[in-house]
Every structure is written in C-alpha cells, then in structure tokens.
Length: 346
Image 1 (cartoon, rainbow, N blue to C red):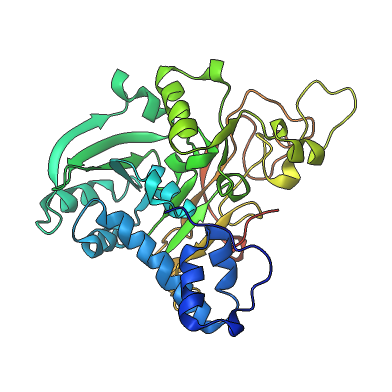
Image 2 (cartoon, rainbow, N blue to C red):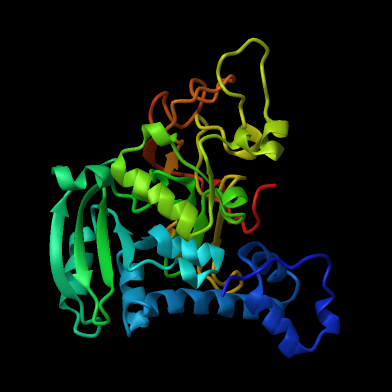
C-alpha cells in the first residue's frame, strides 16, 4: 500500500483515537514526521508506525528481524538501496529481491562472519566479489570495495557491501541517482534529497553518459517505481523558476538554495536533507554519538558527479570538499553540525 499526504489542517484532538492512529499509519513520510510533533500520543504512534515499517522490511528477508537489527547496531551497518527507498516512501511495493546492507571497512569482516554463522538468520553463503574485477566495475563507481551475497531461507537474498572508507554512508551518497541516497539503521534514518524523492522525482546522469547496466537501472526506476527522472532539476518548471543565474554564463544555473546544485557540498544534517531518529523522545542521542552510530561519528560529505558546471562558485569555493572531489569521509568535531531534521526542504 502506498501512503498519502495529509491534506490541509487536521484537528486530531477532535477525532477518535482509533481513527487518528489509522490516519498516521496511512500518512506519507513528510506527514508522519510532522504529526509526531503535535502531541505525545501522536509521537508515540508515529514512532511505533515507523518502527513497524522497519521491522516489516527486514522480515521480508529473514524470520528473525530482531537479530538482524542487533547486528546492524553492533557493527554500525545501515540498510540502503531500494529497501531504504521503500522505507522513506512507505511503499512496500518498492522492496527488491536483494537487501543491501552497507558497512565500513572496520566492521565489514565481523559483520559478514556473524551473519553467516548465526543459525537464527539461516543465511546461505552464495558468493563474494572483489570490486576490482570486470563484474564489479559498476559497484566500484559507488565506493564499494567488495561484497558478499547470502541466500535467505525464503529464496530472497542479502548483500553485504564494504565501503571504501570507515563510513558505511559513502557508497550510498555516491549512488548513480538521488533516489537511492537514503538509509536506515537500528536507531535512525536519512534521506539526502527529500524534496525530490518524496515526490517520486530523481536526478541521474544523461542517458548518453550511462553504461548498459545503469541504463537498465534507470528504466527500472522510471517504469517499476513510477519515478520521473531528469539530469538537472531545472527540467522541472518550479526549479527553473528558482534558479540563480549570472548573465552571459554558459553553465547551467545554480540551485544551491534548493540544495540541488551538482557542485554543491551536501551532508546528512544540512537543510536539504532528512536525518532523524525513530523515537525523538526515547532515543539515546548521547549514546549514538559516543558509539559513533550514524549519522554521528565518521560520516560523509558529497556532491553529485555531473558534467554540468555551476555559474556560481559552489565547486571552487566550498569549505568542505576540494574541487573535483565527489565524496569524502568527514568527522564533525562539533556535533551540533549534525542536526536532526525531520521535514523536507521546500
């Protein structure tokens, strides 16, 4: 079932509790993140509804979702790919056959070992791939060093992917499309481009710049998940109207204010992202910081790889990413830089 937006003002205090909970359960991500701030009861039900979404996704692959979730927590691993997209869209129809789990270099081997050995998960080893061979070139472009594939008892699969750094977020932000810059962990979740993703829009390279595999993936994104795909946000009229232009420039206009300039540095916690926890009132934020669980600890800054320039100075004057670099692990010394944000950038 695809969830929908709550249109117009709703006086929840005037509705029966059962109907209120039903509305929350059917709300889209932007709406559910907003209504959980209305009252303690709505917060608790919204948190329970989001947690149930996470459990349903993991249970699609393994019977013991709690054990798998515990390993995500222990080894600071995160779920990405179409499973994370399914979560932020609240649409189980997007769930893929293969669940993608990402881990940093420091925890990948242990995670792989315990997933294979734990009888509660009942995973069967299928194959391991090093991304320096021909078969792995497409994944190598996404900052993945190697991967291990397991077959689940129900015939579906789990792929464990090792990031090219200490941050499990690096391969996700280096994805070929903005639609897949999403993740969730045992405690938190994030969406890099909510203004696009939650309206089923996505940016990706021009068709001519894509190889055979990525052309197939773009068609899947458009045809199977009902996404509208563009190579630059100005292809949509509302972003064309918001673009900043300089006279006589040959590059495309800057969309920094919308957090969509291809040369602009982004990170989870900036004004164009969603990054939040499942339970705002009960989450141990200090513990997450202490144990460096996403989005805290070693995170990433990124920009979209694009042949398009920017007619401002996003690429050359950025304080975080050097020119021409696409993604880099970063550690914010001041944790206030990583702010939990639960509504999308307008």
